[in-house]
Image: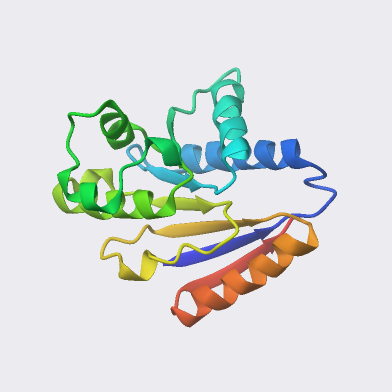
Length: 182
């Protein structure tokens, strides 16, 4: 799997709103460059920022539409329910069909990915965008990994340190790594 780090500068992302705008632009660009049916998962442990991203995606561009679904920790199911996922619940049905899924729960998202990929390979996530403070730790256990993972590193010192820790983590797993300073 390819892991790309986007190290943002204070000039590019001076505040939280600019970070959300950058992620919307990244999602839009990825969707435009990808084949139809490509699915994206955006993970963020900051539910307030995830809600801002959800709101922004509805109005980001006047000439395009970024169809997505927001799943927060309160919407998710626990691990014991993962094997029972079916189309009887609105949340899971919507998550199964949305090309872009926003989630605050990495465990739910990856377990759901594994379940869906086995029974419905067309529902695989092809691209993950991680805004969370921690790396996606359960990727190495997935038989159906996404093609790419994008790690977004904000310009503050704490985020840069977290980015270094994520880099080492993915390096130890043997993933192909690259980085871009923006």
